[in-house]
Image 1 (cartoon, rainbow, N blue to C red):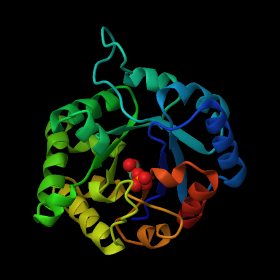
Image 2 (cartoon, rainbow, N blue to C red):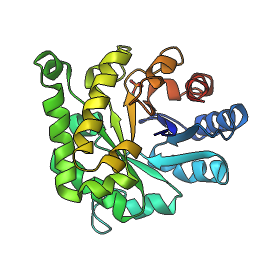
Image 3 (cartoon, rainbow, N blue to C red):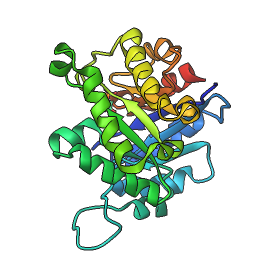
Length: 251
Ligand code: PGA
């Protein structure tokens, strides 16, 4: 099964109108439609409208960094899936480690957001991954397995027809410490095997991205692994040159 690589840039809480405009114009100028790889960016909410106006009709897609599980109502400060869809988003990140650790999103909260994303026609990118302590304690598969089970238990395996998984070891995010291609591949294979016991075809077609200090130099070897289908990129997605180097590695 040839899965199309996805190179996704998570800008986190970075940006300004000037930065967003020049970054997106740089990406448009420096990349083109590619049969082997998709390109997507995840700006903060205030810049989604600008992003839509610049990228609309291009080969680059965009998404939100999180969503509220409710459809609408008295939730000041929150953003719903239908609002993201209205801004032309194709994707939304769900359960990023910063949401889990800083904003206390539990496995149950993550599952609710995943379901809300699907209900509003968005493709959720479900982030999973273990901390340094959990890895050292030999808990990596137990933690990732638990994070997956919470979502599968809530929405069922069929939902993964329209979803993406991102394996992001917490100790590798923003630290410059990338998992080795072998360490990443081993967890990706664990994820795919686990899901294939529920549905072989869906599991085979599912894109599993790696995230955690991906850059232009380590991307080629990471993307060459049989179960790594792209990257969720933080720091290196904030300049067009660095992000495009990763897209070239995928293409
Ligand atoms: P990083 O972030 O590439 O800066 O490690 C990845 C992420 O948080 O998605």
